[in-house]
Image 1 (cartoon, rainbow, N blue to C red):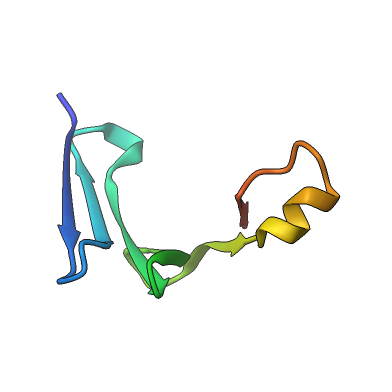
Image 2: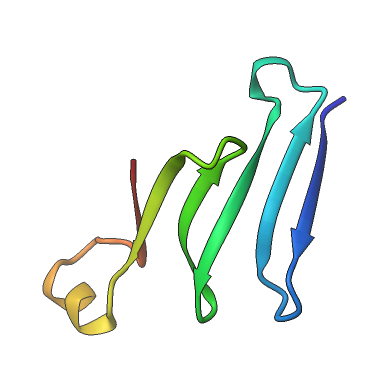
Length: 73
């Protein structure tokens, strides 16, 4: 059975996730936020795992089918 524990800051944003008992997927992730949106995820060794780009609604209208968030590795 996998166990996931999340830590949240005072504004209710997830800032840390720890996954255990899941074999190769064990580890932790740290989340960095700008206002209420996550902008970066780092692994337990502080290496950048993903940078998250939030598109504005006007940019979304110009490209049909694009999503609100795009994760870049």
